[in-house]
Length: 362
Image (cartoon, rainbow, N blue to C red; front, side, top):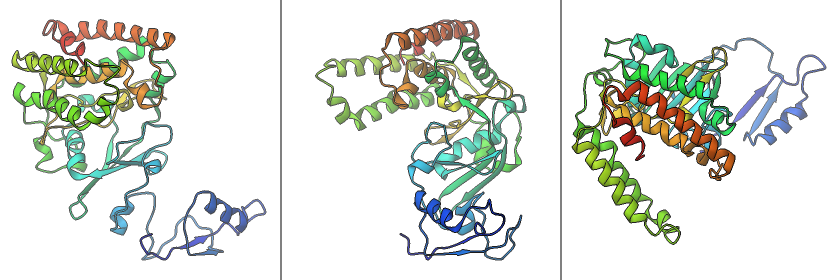
Protein backbone atom coordinates (compact mmCIF):
# COMPACT_ATOMS: atom_id res chain seq x y z
CA UNK A 1 0.00 0.00 0.00
CA UNK A 2 2.94 2.31 0.60
CA UNK A 3 4.49 1.51 -2.77
CA UNK A 4 7.29 -0.71 -1.50
CA UNK A 5 8.59 -3.73 -3.43
CA UNK A 6 8.68 -6.65 -0.98
CA UNK A 7 11.10 -9.55 -1.47
CA UNK A 8 10.97 -12.56 0.87
CA UNK A 9 13.78 -15.05 1.42
CA UNK A 10 13.13 -18.48 2.90
CA UNK A 11 15.11 -21.55 3.87
CA UNK A 12 11.95 -23.64 4.18
CA UNK A 13 12.67 -25.60 1.00
CA UNK A 14 16.05 -26.83 2.29
CA UNK A 15 17.01 -29.47 4.81
CA UNK A 16 15.50 -32.76 5.87
CA UNK A 17 12.40 -34.44 4.54
CA UNK A 18 10.47 -33.06 7.53
CA UNK A 19 11.11 -29.46 6.42
CA UNK A 20 7.95 -27.75 5.12
CA UNK A 21 7.81 -27.56 1.33
CA UNK A 22 7.74 -24.41 -0.76
CA UNK A 23 4.02 -25.00 -1.30
CA UNK A 24 3.48 -25.11 2.48
CA UNK A 25 5.28 -21.79 2.79
CA UNK A 26 3.19 -20.17 0.05
CA UNK A 27 -0.01 -21.49 1.61
CA UNK A 28 1.03 -20.11 5.00
CA UNK A 29 1.76 -16.68 3.53
CA UNK A 30 -1.68 -16.71 1.90
CA UNK A 31 -3.39 -17.78 5.14
CA UNK A 32 -1.74 -14.92 7.03
CA UNK A 33 -2.43 -12.46 4.22
CA UNK A 34 1.23 -11.42 4.06
CA UNK A 35 1.88 -9.36 0.89
CA UNK A 36 5.02 -9.82 -1.22
CA UNK A 37 6.25 -9.27 -4.77
CA UNK A 38 8.94 -11.94 -5.00
CA UNK A 39 10.04 -14.90 -2.88
CA UNK A 40 13.39 -16.71 -3.03
CA UNK A 41 13.80 -20.22 -1.65
CA UNK A 42 17.14 -21.68 -0.74
CA UNK A 43 18.54 -19.25 1.83
CA UNK A 44 21.11 -21.24 3.84
CA UNK A 45 20.08 -22.13 7.38
CA UNK A 46 22.08 -20.22 9.99
CA UNK A 47 21.77 -18.98 13.55
CA UNK A 48 22.73 -15.41 12.62
CA UNK A 49 22.70 -13.49 9.33
CA UNK A 50 25.11 -10.54 9.08
CA UNK A 51 24.78 -7.75 6.55
CA UNK A 52 24.56 -3.99 6.33
CA UNK A 53 20.89 -4.05 5.28
CA UNK A 54 19.51 -6.54 7.81
CA UNK A 55 16.85 -5.30 10.26
CA UNK A 56 15.51 -7.51 13.02
CA UNK A 57 11.74 -7.74 13.41
CA UNK A 58 12.12 -8.76 17.06
CA UNK A 59 12.76 -5.27 18.41
CA UNK A 60 11.75 -1.74 17.41
CA UNK A 61 11.29 -1.77 13.62
CA UNK A 62 10.02 1.81 13.73
CA UNK A 63 13.38 2.88 15.13
CA UNK A 64 15.41 0.61 12.83
CA UNK A 65 13.60 1.45 9.58
CA UNK A 66 12.67 5.04 10.40
CA UNK A 67 9.18 4.60 8.97
CA UNK A 68 6.10 4.51 11.21
CA UNK A 69 3.10 2.41 10.22
CA UNK A 70 0.17 2.23 12.61
CA UNK A 71 -0.55 -1.50 13.00
CA UNK A 72 -3.97 -3.00 12.56
CA UNK A 73 -5.92 -3.28 15.84
CA UNK A 74 -5.79 -7.07 15.82
CA UNK A 75 -1.97 -7.11 16.02
CA UNK A 76 -1.56 -4.31 18.57
CA UNK A 77 -1.74 -6.48 21.65
CA UNK A 78 -0.59 -9.73 23.18
CA UNK A 79 -2.45 -12.98 22.63
CA UNK A 80 -4.99 -13.64 25.36
CA UNK A 81 -4.80 -10.12 26.80
CA UNK A 82 -7.32 -7.29 26.83
CA UNK A 83 -6.51 -5.22 23.69
CA UNK A 84 -4.44 -2.09 24.41
CA UNK A 85 -5.93 1.34 23.84
CA UNK A 86 -6.10 2.53 20.25
CA UNK A 87 -3.06 4.81 20.56
CA UNK A 88 -0.71 2.11 21.96
CA UNK A 89 0.98 -0.93 20.45
CA UNK A 90 2.05 -3.89 22.60
CA UNK A 91 3.80 -6.92 21.13
CA UNK A 92 6.23 -9.65 22.21
CA UNK A 93 9.95 -9.18 21.56
CA UNK A 94 10.96 -12.69 22.58
CA UNK A 95 9.87 -15.23 25.18
CA UNK A 96 10.81 -13.00 28.10
CA UNK A 97 10.34 -9.41 26.89
CA UNK A 98 7.54 -7.16 25.64
CA UNK A 99 7.70 -4.05 23.46
CA UNK A 100 5.27 -1.16 24.01
CA UNK A 101 5.09 2.05 21.97
CA UNK A 102 2.78 5.01 21.56
CA UNK A 103 2.61 8.80 21.25
CA UNK A 104 5.25 10.43 23.43
CA UNK A 105 2.79 12.69 25.24
CA UNK A 106 0.80 9.63 26.34
CA UNK A 107 3.79 7.40 27.11
CA UNK A 108 5.57 10.13 29.12
CA UNK A 109 3.58 9.47 32.28
CA UNK A 110 4.29 5.74 32.35
CA UNK A 111 7.96 6.30 31.52
CA UNK A 112 8.19 8.89 34.29
CA UNK A 113 6.59 6.44 36.71
CA UNK A 114 9.20 3.77 35.93
CA UNK A 115 11.96 6.35 36.26
CA UNK A 116 10.69 7.38 39.71
CA UNK A 117 9.92 3.90 41.06
CA UNK A 118 11.13 3.33 44.63
CA UNK A 119 13.18 0.16 45.18
CA UNK A 120 10.78 -1.16 47.83
CA UNK A 121 7.95 -1.67 45.30
CA UNK A 122 10.00 -2.64 42.26
CA UNK A 123 8.92 -6.27 42.63
CA UNK A 124 5.33 -5.26 41.77
CA UNK A 125 6.19 -4.19 38.21
CA UNK A 126 8.02 -5.34 35.07
CA UNK A 127 11.68 -4.38 34.72
CA UNK A 128 12.40 -1.84 31.98
CA UNK A 129 15.31 -2.94 29.81
CA UNK A 130 15.22 -0.18 27.21
CA UNK A 131 13.51 3.18 26.78
CA UNK A 132 13.58 5.21 23.55
CA UNK A 133 11.98 8.37 22.19
CA UNK A 134 11.81 9.57 18.60
CA UNK A 135 11.19 13.32 18.47
CA UNK A 136 10.66 13.31 14.71
CA UNK A 137 7.92 10.69 14.88
CA UNK A 138 6.59 11.89 18.23
CA UNK A 139 6.69 8.35 19.63
CA UNK A 140 8.24 6.68 22.66
CA UNK A 141 8.79 3.01 23.39
CA UNK A 142 9.66 0.63 26.21
CA UNK A 143 11.14 -2.85 26.20
CA UNK A 144 10.33 -4.55 29.50
CA UNK A 145 10.29 -7.99 31.03
CA UNK A 146 7.25 -10.08 30.23
CA UNK A 147 5.08 -11.13 33.15
CA UNK A 148 3.99 -14.72 32.62
CA UNK A 149 0.54 -14.90 34.08
CA UNK A 150 -3.09 -13.99 33.63
CA UNK A 151 -4.91 -10.69 34.00
CA UNK A 152 -7.43 -10.25 36.78
CA UNK A 153 -9.91 -9.37 34.02
CA UNK A 154 -9.73 -12.93 32.73
CA UNK A 155 -9.85 -14.30 36.26
CA UNK A 156 -13.02 -12.29 36.82
CA UNK A 157 -14.58 -13.70 33.65
CA UNK A 158 -13.75 -17.21 34.87
CA UNK A 159 -15.00 -16.27 38.36
CA UNK A 160 -11.66 -17.26 39.86
CA UNK A 161 -10.83 -13.96 41.57
CA UNK A 162 -10.95 -15.37 45.08
CA UNK A 163 -11.16 -13.23 48.18
CA UNK A 164 -7.52 -14.10 48.87
CA UNK A 165 -6.42 -12.94 45.42
CA UNK A 166 -8.42 -9.73 45.79
CA UNK A 167 -6.80 -9.12 49.18
CA UNK A 168 -3.35 -9.63 47.61
CA UNK A 169 -4.21 -7.10 44.88
CA UNK A 170 -5.33 -4.55 47.47
CA UNK A 171 -2.19 -5.22 49.51
CA UNK A 172 -0.11 -4.39 46.43
CA UNK A 173 -1.96 -1.10 45.97
CA UNK A 174 -1.47 -0.29 49.66
CA UNK A 175 2.28 -0.81 49.29
CA UNK A 176 2.27 1.65 46.37
CA UNK A 177 0.22 4.21 48.28
CA UNK A 178 2.46 4.09 51.36
CA UNK A 179 5.71 4.57 49.45
CA UNK A 180 7.94 7.55 50.12
CA UNK A 181 9.75 9.34 47.26
CA UNK A 182 13.24 8.21 46.43
CA UNK A 183 16.09 9.25 44.19
CA UNK A 184 16.35 8.17 40.55
CA UNK A 185 16.31 4.38 40.33
CA UNK A 186 16.39 3.63 36.59
CA UNK A 187 19.03 4.81 34.15
CA UNK A 188 17.10 3.33 31.21
CA UNK A 189 14.32 5.94 31.39
CA UNK A 190 15.88 9.23 32.36
CA UNK A 191 14.99 12.76 31.34
CA UNK A 192 14.67 16.05 33.19
CA UNK A 193 10.90 16.15 32.68
CA UNK A 194 10.35 12.60 33.90
CA UNK A 195 12.53 13.15 36.97
CA UNK A 196 9.97 15.72 38.12
CA UNK A 197 7.25 13.06 38.25
CA UNK A 198 7.98 12.19 41.88
CA UNK A 199 8.66 15.77 43.06
CA UNK A 200 5.39 17.57 42.30
CA UNK A 201 2.60 16.96 44.80
CA UNK A 202 -0.90 17.97 43.64
CA UNK A 203 -3.37 19.99 45.68
CA UNK A 204 -7.06 19.04 46.01
CA UNK A 205 -7.74 21.56 43.24
CA UNK A 206 -5.28 19.71 40.99
CA UNK A 207 -6.90 16.40 41.93
CA UNK A 208 -10.26 17.84 40.85
CA UNK A 209 -9.19 17.51 37.18
CA UNK A 210 -9.77 13.77 37.43
CA UNK A 211 -13.35 14.12 38.59
CA UNK A 212 -16.07 16.56 37.47
CA UNK A 213 -14.20 18.05 34.45
CA UNK A 214 -13.29 14.60 33.08
CA UNK A 215 -16.77 13.21 33.74
CA UNK A 216 -18.46 16.23 32.11
CA UNK A 217 -16.19 16.01 29.05
CA UNK A 218 -16.93 12.33 28.50
CA UNK A 219 -20.65 12.78 29.11
CA UNK A 220 -20.76 15.55 26.50
CA UNK A 221 -18.67 13.58 23.97
CA UNK A 222 -20.92 10.52 24.30
CA UNK A 223 -24.20 12.38 24.64
CA UNK A 224 -25.58 10.95 21.39
CA UNK A 225 -25.01 7.43 22.71
CA UNK A 226 -26.66 8.17 26.05
CA UNK A 227 -29.66 9.69 24.29
CA UNK A 228 -30.32 6.39 22.51
CA UNK A 229 -31.50 4.80 25.76
CA UNK A 230 -33.07 7.90 27.32
CA UNK A 231 -36.50 6.25 27.01
CA UNK A 232 -35.32 3.50 29.37
CA UNK A 233 -33.44 5.90 31.67
CA UNK A 234 -35.40 9.18 31.67
CA UNK A 235 -33.57 10.38 34.80
CA UNK A 236 -30.24 10.48 32.95
CA UNK A 237 -29.63 14.21 33.51
CA UNK A 238 -30.65 13.93 37.16
CA UNK A 239 -28.13 11.12 37.63
CA UNK A 240 -25.38 13.17 35.96
CA UNK A 241 -26.10 16.22 38.14
CA UNK A 242 -26.19 14.10 41.29
CA UNK A 243 -22.80 12.57 40.55
CA UNK A 244 -21.10 15.86 39.63
CA UNK A 245 -22.54 17.58 42.72
CA UNK A 246 -21.18 14.77 44.87
CA UNK A 247 -17.73 15.00 43.27
CA UNK A 248 -17.63 18.78 43.66
CA UNK A 249 -18.42 18.41 47.36
CA UNK A 250 -15.75 15.73 47.66
CA UNK A 251 -13.12 18.19 46.42
CA UNK A 252 -14.48 21.23 48.29
CA UNK A 253 -14.45 19.31 51.57
CA UNK A 254 -10.89 18.10 50.82
CA UNK A 255 -11.78 14.47 51.43
CA UNK A 256 -9.20 13.16 48.97
CA UNK A 257 -6.19 11.26 50.32
CA UNK A 258 -3.14 12.49 48.44
CA UNK A 259 -0.19 10.12 48.20
CA UNK A 260 3.22 10.49 46.56
CA UNK A 261 2.48 7.35 44.57
CA UNK A 262 -0.70 5.98 43.04
CA UNK A 263 -1.05 3.61 40.10
CA UNK A 264 -3.52 5.84 38.27
CA UNK A 265 -5.40 3.12 36.34
CA UNK A 266 -5.61 -0.15 38.32
CA UNK A 267 -8.55 -1.63 36.43
CA UNK A 268 -8.32 -5.42 36.44
CA UNK A 269 -6.83 -5.58 32.93
CA UNK A 270 -3.76 -3.78 34.34
CA UNK A 271 -3.41 -6.20 37.27
CA UNK A 272 -1.75 -9.57 36.65
CA UNK A 273 -1.40 -12.77 38.65
CA UNK A 274 2.07 -14.18 38.00
CA UNK A 275 1.98 -17.86 37.14
CA UNK A 276 5.22 -18.99 38.78
CA UNK A 277 4.85 -17.14 42.09
CA UNK A 278 1.14 -16.44 42.49
CA UNK A 279 2.03 -12.82 43.24
CA UNK A 280 0.28 -9.71 41.93
CA UNK A 281 1.98 -7.50 39.34
CA UNK A 282 0.88 -4.16 37.87
CA UNK A 283 1.32 -2.56 34.42
CA UNK A 284 0.26 0.61 32.55
CA UNK A 285 0.60 3.19 35.31
CA UNK A 286 -0.89 6.59 34.48
CA UNK A 287 1.92 8.84 35.75
CA UNK A 288 0.15 12.12 34.94
CA UNK A 289 -2.54 14.44 36.21
CA UNK A 290 -3.90 16.49 33.36
CA UNK A 291 -0.83 17.72 31.48
CA UNK A 292 1.43 17.45 34.54
CA UNK A 293 3.72 14.45 34.98
CA UNK A 294 3.43 13.04 38.48
CA UNK A 295 3.37 9.76 40.33
CA UNK A 296 1.18 11.38 42.98
CA UNK A 297 -2.58 11.51 43.20
CA UNK A 298 -5.67 10.60 45.16
CA UNK A 299 -5.54 7.15 46.75
CA UNK A 300 -9.29 6.92 46.40
CA UNK A 301 -9.00 7.35 42.63
CA UNK A 302 -7.09 4.06 42.54
CA UNK A 303 -9.57 2.36 44.85
CA UNK A 304 -12.50 3.59 42.76
CA UNK A 305 -10.92 2.30 39.55
CA UNK A 306 -10.69 -1.14 41.12
CA UNK A 307 -14.22 -0.88 42.50
CA UNK A 308 -15.67 -0.19 39.04
CA UNK A 309 -14.10 -3.45 37.86
CA UNK A 310 -15.88 -5.24 40.69
CA UNK A 311 -19.12 -3.71 39.41
CA UNK A 312 -18.65 -5.48 36.07
CA UNK A 313 -16.65 -2.96 34.01
CA UNK A 314 -14.18 -5.55 32.67
CA UNK A 315 -16.95 -8.03 31.92
CA UNK A 316 -18.66 -5.45 29.72
CA UNK A 317 -15.40 -4.66 27.91
CA UNK A 318 -14.87 -8.34 27.18
CA UNK A 319 -18.37 -8.79 25.82
CA UNK A 320 -20.06 -10.41 28.81
CA UNK A 321 -23.05 -8.09 28.76
CA UNK A 322 -25.40 -9.86 31.16
CA UNK A 323 -23.79 -8.94 34.47
CA UNK A 324 -27.19 -9.10 36.20
CA UNK A 325 -27.39 -12.87 35.74
CA UNK A 326 -27.98 -14.39 39.18
CA UNK A 327 -24.70 -16.29 39.58
CA UNK A 328 -22.57 -13.43 38.24
CA UNK A 329 -24.40 -10.88 40.37
CA UNK A 330 -23.88 -12.89 43.55
CA UNK A 331 -20.22 -13.40 42.72
CA UNK A 332 -19.59 -9.67 42.20
CA UNK A 333 -21.52 -8.79 45.35
CA UNK A 334 -19.34 -11.15 47.40
CA UNK A 335 -16.18 -9.59 45.95
CA UNK A 336 -17.40 -6.07 46.71
CA UNK A 337 -18.16 -7.07 50.29
CA UNK A 338 -14.64 -8.47 50.65
CA UNK A 339 -13.27 -5.32 49.00
CA UNK A 340 -14.95 -3.05 51.57
CA UNK A 341 -13.69 -5.12 54.48
CA UNK A 342 -10.10 -4.85 53.28
CA UNK A 343 -10.32 -1.17 52.30
CA UNK A 344 -11.85 -0.30 55.68
CA UNK A 345 -9.00 -2.08 57.46
CA UNK A 346 -6.25 -0.60 55.26
CA UNK A 347 -7.40 2.98 54.82
CA UNK A 348 -10.38 4.17 56.82
CA UNK A 349 -8.48 4.29 60.09
CA UNK A 350 -6.29 6.97 58.48
CA UNK A 351 -9.18 9.16 57.33
CA UNK A 352 -12.43 7.70 58.57
CA UNK A 353 -15.25 7.25 56.11
CA UNK A 354 -13.63 8.82 53.07
CA UNK A 355 -12.83 5.60 51.21
CA UNK A 356 -16.42 4.46 51.20
CA UNK A 357 -17.55 7.98 50.31
CA UNK A 358 -16.01 8.08 46.88
CA UNK A 359 -16.09 4.36 46.18
CA UNK A 360 -19.83 4.26 46.69
CA UNK A 361 -20.28 7.08 44.19
CA UNK A 362 -18.10 5.67 41.42
